[in-house]
Image (cartoon, rainbow over all chains, first blue to last red; front, side, top):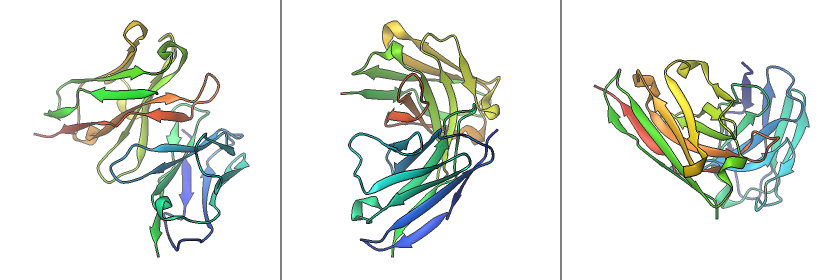
Length: 107
Length: 120
């Protein structure tokens, strides 16, 4: 199985900050990576697919990059509604696997 | 509007069975892979299983192989998860989710989840 490792596990940031979350795959997954946002008590929401494609309706302050084994989710200017947990997921090999999550907290 | 509505969760004893259902609307159900994803209390997301458009291909996470069966009824726009020999570690909120498209397994639409608790 492909292991997905996210870092950091949590980050404290202020409104307006630039936040970067990384995700590393245990083997080459090309660009088959998705990013999700989850708020308490809610289902996850797809933000980015195929590493850098912005899902319809997602604000442009979210961006994704990377290929192979190393990927990044960047929030260019953190907004109050962005405080949540973010997960990466590899979407190429079964079983599909998620990273452990990164909690973005208010500083 | 795409909607996915799960049902069938509840409190069951270890070793028992449960069948989850997911009703879909707002899209052509038979055109998409469908998935089950779970989240244990206070934990991260775990992909459980998925099924191809015509049901001819199914995949499972190792921890549920031989105990869980995913199925679908395209005529009823419904997805199912038959869960047998349930264990305490199967306690979670179970979400059904739809793939982005034919080529990409990213999960674009999710239901609200149904809670399964396995406890004596």
